[in-house]
Image 1 (spheres, helix red, strand yellow):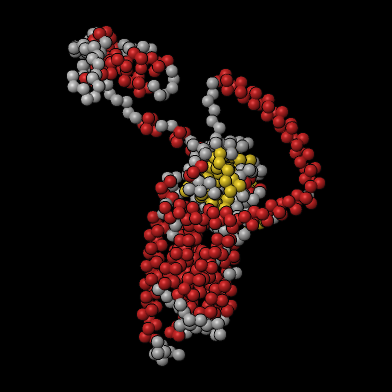
Image 2 (tube, chains in turn orange, purple):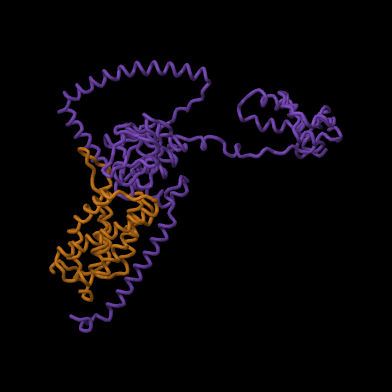
Length: 169
Length: 392
C-alpha cells in the first residue's frame, strides 16, 4: 500500500503507454545472434490487463485502441487487428475484475494467461477468416509464452495504482 | 464493505457503465478500421497514408536502434571467424575445387545457350535492375511477418517488387513511401508464392503460416517432391521472375511438405530489391486494349485528310513485325478502299472463292472494302489544310 499514488490519467495511462511503445520498438530491431532471434511478446497485453484491474475507465479503451493501431503499423499487420484483440482482452479482464479482487499473485497470473489466450484465440480466428489459412500453432505458442512471462510488469502497475481510487477498492 | 456502505457507491455503477460504453465504441471503431483495410492489394494507394507516414518515421528510428545490434552481430561474426579460420579454410578449399568444375560446365553451357539463342532468335528476359537496402525493423509474430527496408519510392521501388538476400528470396514489397518500403516475408500468413521443384518442374504454392518454414500447397502428381529438393520461384502469374532460389523441401512434423528458406542461412540485414516488372506492367495496356477504328466511309472529309499519309505509313506495317506501326496500317486502309480498282463491283462468281490475302502494298479487299466499293464518287485529291487560325 505504500506505493499507492493518485490516479492521474497521464501517470497510470500515459506513461505506461509510452513505455510499452518504446519496449515494442526495441524488440522489433532485427537482431539475430547465434542463429536466434528476439522473441516478439505483446507488451501492450500487460496494460490491457492492469488497466482493467485497477479500475474501469473511459480513457483506457481508447488508449488500448491507439496501442493496437500502433502495433499494427509497426508490425505491418492488417490495420485494426491488434486493436480488436487487445480490446477483447481488456473486456474479458473488465468483466472478471470482481472475481479477481483480493486474489493472490498466482491466481492473477493465471487470469492474465487466460486473458492473453483469449486475445490470441480471437486473433487466430480473425486471421483465419481473413487469409483463409490457419496460422501455425507453434509460433502462436511462442508468442503466448513470451507474453505471459511479462506479468510482473502488469503486477507492478496494479500495485502502484489499485488503491488510488477509493471508489474501486 | 458492501456497495450500500461505500460512500462512493453511487458513483461506481455509472462509471462502470461509462467504461463499458467506451469499450464498445472503441471496439466498433477498431472493427471499422479492420474491415476497411486493404493490405493485400498491389495498388500503391491501398497502403494508406497512415502507414506511409508511420513508415517514413519508423525507418530512420529503426535504423538508429538497429545499429548496435548490427555492430554486435559483426563483432560476433568476426570472433567466430577468427577461431574457426582453420576449418573454414579447409571447407572453402573443397568448395572451390567443386566450383571450378562447375565453372567449366557453366562456360560450356553458356556458349551452347548463346548459339541456340542466335539460331532461334530467342528473346530472353532483360536484366533486372536492383536496389540495395538495409532492414531496419522486423516483425516475426504468428500473425504478421514483415520487415521495413530503408529504400523507397525515391529509388524506384514499387509494390510487388521481389526482395532477396544474398542467399535467396525473402519476400516482396507491399508498401512504399519515401525512404522506406514494407516487405511481406514468405513466412507471413498472407504470403502466397508460386514455386517449382528444380528437379521435376513440379509446381506448388508456397503458403506462409507465421512459422519459419512455409508449407507447399497444391502439389500435384505422384511423388512430385523428395526431401532435399531445391525449390525455385516459378514465375507463374508474372509477379516474380523465374528461377530465384527459395529454399529446400523438407517433410514437416505435421506430415506436410515445407520449405527451409534459403534466406534463413544468415541474418537478413541487407537485401536487394529487384525492380522487376512483369509483362503486364511493361506493355502498353492501353495500346493493347485499343479497338481498331472502323474505316470511314469513302468520300468523307477524314478520308481526304488521311490520304497523303497512306503510302508511307503502309510500308512499315508490311515489312516489320513490331506492333507499334499497326495503328498506322489501320489508318492506311481507308484510302486503299477508294482506289479505282476497288471501285469496280465484285463479280458474282467470286463470292464462293476464298478471300484474297492482304498484299504487301496494302491493297487488301476487306469486307468493309467491298461494301465501300459500291458506286461512289471517286475521292478528290487531297487539298492542303490551312493552318489553324487562317480563314480560307
